[in-house]
Length: 416
Ligand SMILES: C[S@@+](CC[C@H](N)C(=O)[O-])C[C@H]1O[C@@H](n2cnc3c(N)ncnc32)[C@H](O)[C@@H]1O
Image (cartoon, rainbow, N blue to C red; front, side, top):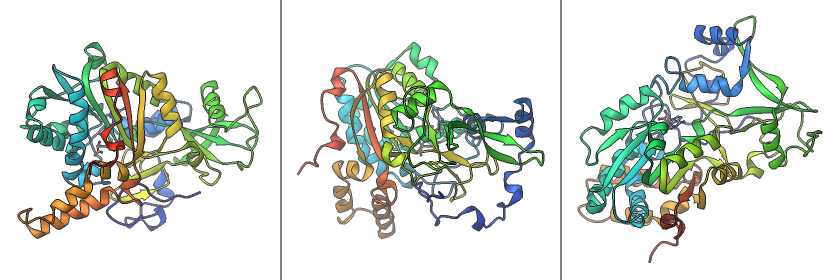
């Protein structure tokens, strides 16, 4: 089933056949030379997960690895922090509360996958202004595996109010921090395994090279035991050696699993001795994620404010993203040592963090010129739009008694 775009685009959704640059067509899936070499070396085909890893994160060819993708209203796709400072300003009191709960001593604000650095910049500014005592003990620590993105973050964050450094997971595991960690639209960039029901068996989906040089999606070997275990947990396969059949799913029904989630959450847990991880991302309950109707999963490609359901076009030039499954995330988080603190939609979270007060403030005399106020008002409304960013999930995970003892502010009723 073709599905619409959940990511926020500044233009209306453009399907591949409508693409204004004419890239759609037979040439759209022609493999570039670097990929031809890799696929030939691998015997002609690789699991979809390997393809996605290369297409996004390869340092020479990947969309993020090279730093080619641009986040923002004038880039490839917009995210909440890229719409203006409001997102960071509204989030700051929640972070301050979590950081204060950790008591005296040095603290860290760790952002994973900071993209253009917008959120880190907004939060550093808001915390330095509103909580100077806290900010004096706070360092900004950025985890960005893609050198091309890190280069732009360095430029964006130079001269800010907090000390800043870039670290990898190994360095952080060696010297864990106390503080708050953010993963804003990061986990949707983890490479996913795609599985296809062929009418009798679950098979791993492959990306294969045809004799013409085109890329195709092809069913591969029956799925490995770990994937079968997850399918059983999701009620998509019978337990035991039979592994099926799956009631109602037609042959060709396909979806995603996230094998990278538990290792990622394990690395994040090793990096934070005490504190909170806030995940903000597209996420669906398993019953919606793996519904009969969602027959081609949640995978989408984005570039230049266009969305496409075809993950094979121009590998390394399009962002590829897959939603998270809430139950799978919860299970992976528990296995990695995190305690669930609750989750809700972004619209609800931002209202609890006084988005209404921010809107009201824009009506007060002296709150900036009219054009600026209108732009800020529009950005605030977009953050809670139930047909867009308002549908994102905020998922809080904790480590240690200090931050786990209290319901997160964004899940409490707004104070009257
Ligand atoms: C969709 S962008 C989000 C950028 C930013 N957080 C925002 O919302 O504007 C994804 C970011 O995550 C980074 N990334 C991808 N895989 C990652 C991983 N395994 N760990 C940390 N960051 C990752 C990408 O390089 C990129 O900076």
